[in-house]
Image (cartoon, rainbow, N blue to C red):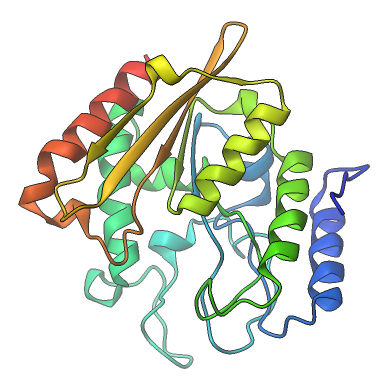
Amino acid sequence: MVIQLKTIDKQAVSDEINKKSDELEYELGSALSYNSFNALISPKYPIAFIGLNPGGDKYDKPSIESENGKCAYYYENWTVKGENKKTPPDEKELAPLQHQIIKLYKRLADIFGCDYTELMDKSIMANLVPFRSPSWNALPKREDALEFSRGLWASIFEPSSVKVIICMSGISFQAIGDILRAASYEHRPEESSVGGTGWGKTKYHIKKYSLSEKSILLIRLPHLSRYKLLNSDGCNMAVEKIIQIIKEHIG
């Protein structure tokens, strides 16, 4: 069932996620926004980064946002176990995915004329599906989770708040496209493109959607924990092209 929240606040969203988690018998917790809930519903910067679902193989307390509003991609320590975690972590303690996203956001921050941490703290950075699992394929009842998550995002996400949405999964890319079309945005295939990343046969996809005078770029990248595009000289040309397309679209 697609949900439609009557009020959009942290407690209402948290209650719906926890209720669905119990219904689907998930036991590892959940995580939605990687920074503040306010950045999710009212971002300062018109760019979003949407992953698929949070990883993990043991229970972690459900969270609707980061505890201090700082973006988890640079502020949380994902590699050191136990209590002796420094926040923000030293560079050597960052996980591979964190390294990649920080490098990407340093490039994107140049477009907006701000520090990358400011951009990461005050733009949408979240998971499409909030329920935690060791991998996507290990998540039980995936179709139920996706149906719920599409409804959740349709309730909390205002497309006019962004100009660019970067998805780190084909599933997220498809789901956000569905949400845009349901909000009356029209896909513009003549202004969309597909290109090689320079990493084997992997490709990036860019789709343009428009509604009246408003247009949104929806971008799909391969998963940056596995495909370290920002580290590879062979991917420089593709990365530069993507950055330039974003810059031109942002204006």
